[in-house]
Image (cartoon, rainbow, N blue to C red; front, side):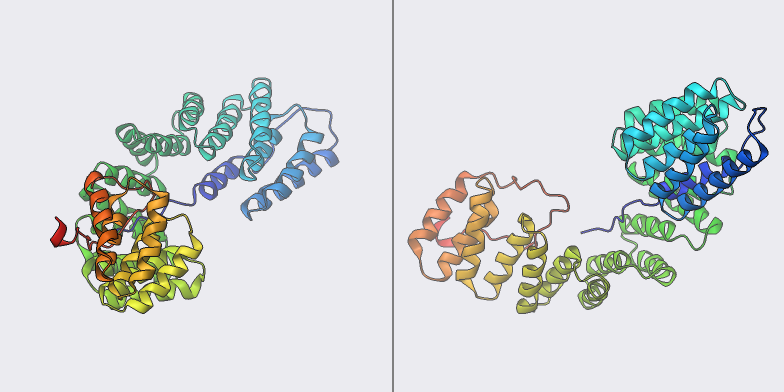
Length: 406
């Protein structure tokens, strides 16, 4: 098992950067009255504030007011497109971005607003998982504003999602050159370095990010991931402990529990999973990993209870059901173990592990006929095959076929 807290916060970071550009109206020579212009500025500022507060739909209404007053300027469409994107209204966001691109050619600061409109499109494509189109949109932004580190940072993230780590590192390095005082490009470049297994470079970048933003938990988590890759468990625990002091989130306790588990410190692993569960009673993975730790220290009834709870929260998980069957077997509850193994065999007829487990369980209850039948079936199955499940993990106890029928 390993820690790998998912990267988060992209929308907040990008939204903040876009808002910084669009806080004030450009100078214009239109016939609107001063009262109308003041109202447009008021609506723009209110929309920006709502977007920063995480209320994109309300922000979109305010930006619509700007558009009603200044329909020939790109600024309202860019901001409303960003708000729509944040609200998951992707078709509307793209439509506003396209409108802004057309209007930008006719108004002041044409390159700036067109570049920001392309960024809105890139954000939509990133959210939709279409990173090829996101890269195309960011590239259009960069062509118009080649020294804008926000666009380089965004394109670097999409390159990472496509596994194009060298290109990601190139963009993120350029962003760092443009402004070495911002932590985010260091954080993202560290992720790219870790992906290519250059943990030393990843640790250098996360350490620099921590210097620049010591209260950011992502840097500590990412560096902990690197330390875990290198089996430097004490340093991983120290970083996760620091992150917990900043923001005691369930994910952080869960991740530190995994490091303790890798150290063989099952009691502390159980304690951290328990705290994660206390903070989130539906934390499936915390129940699952606490169960495995209980199983390792032979507290089978506690393990079985946690496996059942985890399975109730993730009923289709093959690894949860298999580990439950394994714990039941080790607890001497052979009939229950057979029941769970049988369910797995029905769902995954190519999977050898539950067949071998059930053969052993039949052997323990003296049913030699069924034991031999399962053994014969197991011998026909590929031992390397396993179900396709994210985070698949089964306890390392391998149930070989009973010795008397090998």
